[in-house]
Structure formats: C-alpha cells, structure tokens
Image 1 (tube, helix red, strand yellow):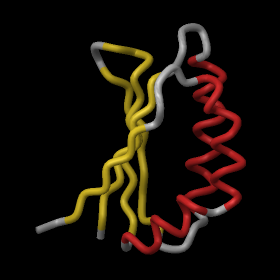
Image 2 (tube, rainbow, N blue to C red):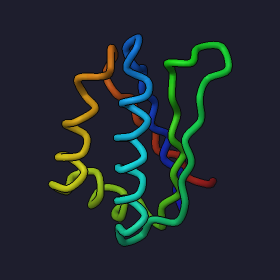
Image 3 (cartoon, helix red, strand yellow):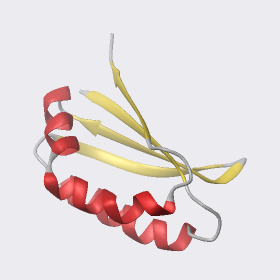
Length: 94
C-alpha cells in the first residue's frame, strides 16, 4: 500500500466552490481500481491550505488514476481556484 499526499492552496473567497469540486474528485477516485481510502484535511494555521491523504494499493494504481482523463477533467475545474501549483508526495512503507 502507498499513501499519496496532495497539497493544494486555495485562493481567497473560493473555498466553498473548491470544496464542492474537490469532493467530486474524491468521489470519483473511490471507484478507481486500487483506491483504498481518502480524506481531506484543512491546515489549522492556514484555512486555504488543504491536504488530501489517499491510500492506494500500488504506485501503478495511483499512476493510472493520476493520468486518466476523468481526473484531468475534474482537476481542470479546480486549477483556476488555486493560487499555487498542486504538490503531490507519494509515500511507501519501508
């Protein structure tokens, strides 16, 4: 199993619109092969900094989801709401 950390920083006043669309991305990921679980957290010191923690069966499963057209289309809706580039970290157990 791997854990994927997705960090996003949302532009001021776009939090509600972002929340709605980001939930849709997670809902679609749930149906992707290899998806195990996921949650989104808000930074306690910066309410516009969001972290999604997702567990995937393998790097290959994550890569398949990351590069699929469905994710790209959904992500295209939130990119204009972010004031920084998305940062992704993939963690593996040692």
